[in-house]
Figure 1 (spheres, rainbow, N blue to C red):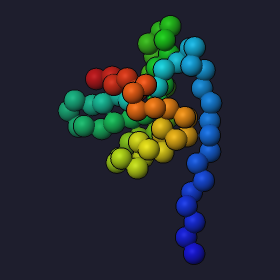
Figure 2 (tube, rainbow, N blue to C red):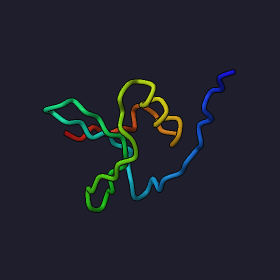
Figure 3 (cartoon, one colour):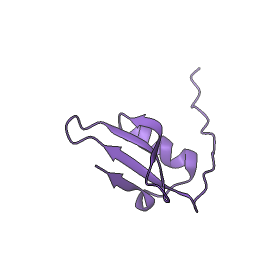
Figure 4 (cartoon, one colour):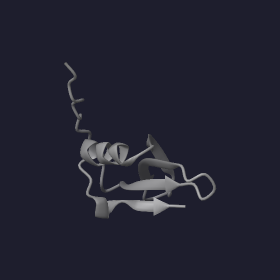
Length: 72
């Protein structure tokens, strides 16, 4: 019947980027992505609508919850 989506493992350069979640103070919207360490520029990957989206982000890139930086 219904199959669970396969999570595709993707890599990112940990020496140049760090995992981050950009949060809007006004709307509460959260966007997961990566922040470039040299410039501070944020690269969007996906919108986080709920905890399942966040878990998918963590699994897809092999990130631990403690590695994520919040950007306001």
